[in-house]
Length: 468
Image (cartoon, rainbow, N blue to C red):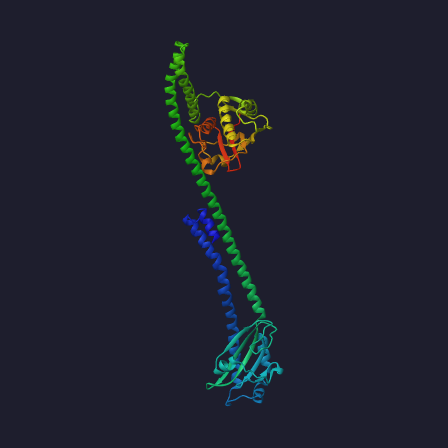
């Protein structure tokens, strides 16, 4: 039940042909061994018993032609006189048919003849003899080795014990008891059934293994397909938002092109007019903030002016950190691991400074008063499999800039929206920092990914194509 629940949660049972394959395989795995145990083994065992039972009937009928004449009751003397000439034949019969013992009972249940003389004189007072055999019915049982026969004697071998009544004119005269040794045949039967059971169990296990592998592969394919679809939808959403952000940024830019030059003209014509300056300064400050906001929107929308050049990412981090550290609390430790050489990329240093500043500020805000921010630069190869799972990502050599913090982290829902414009978890803020990071990195043909858990910090990995 737990297996079916787990499979259902993984969407395997929601796929019709996978569900049918699983159900059929489970039925076969259960039915094949049970069929062998419940039907084949009892059926073959019954055939062996019936075969020996028929042999006993044939021998009894042969002997009855010698014993049954005009008499109505058989005695010891009469039986010995009739069978004295047939003892040699009985030995041959015993050898040919695996016959290990032959007895004859009078109608009272006394043994009046036996291939083992010490049995003569014993009385069979069992219920089956008087209620079944004495009424003219054949009675046979399989007696296993080292268990007791119907008469309570311990058997040294596997035998079929058969009682055949001797009747004349529907009158019961006595009964033959014939023991057949089936040890060899029973061993052959057990060996055959063991091999067949092993084959069936092997087939069932192989079938289950094949089905398991098939389901695992299909589950993996379904999961990968869903992940790719989710990433594609996310990429399409980001593209749509980027298009909207680009349009807004251009409209802002057009408006600022009117506001800012006119403010500058007012300042130039009336430089000493404090009353005018008192009103133009707030307008100028707001306009410049809007200009900065516009540049962030353009960066997110992959617009703006870029001046790419070949730079060492290690050198860039070392030269940029002094400008970032002064806005970070003194209790926060900034660590760098820049051990790999020749980490060159084609990038606009100004735009990358915006990226590093935005990520570092987010990391610092996630820390209260103490903690660490660790920056690492390393080479990394993106293969075809990874590239296929991410929209616009190309396989090849990349330089990875990792920014890790020991802050509070974030949940899955927040992490999914971290690159959306104007999305912020802070009480104040425009929420454009990570959106600009996304746009700038994408415009450099790179890839940015965020890993985070609540209480376990955040890791931002920025991949930029390596410049040879």
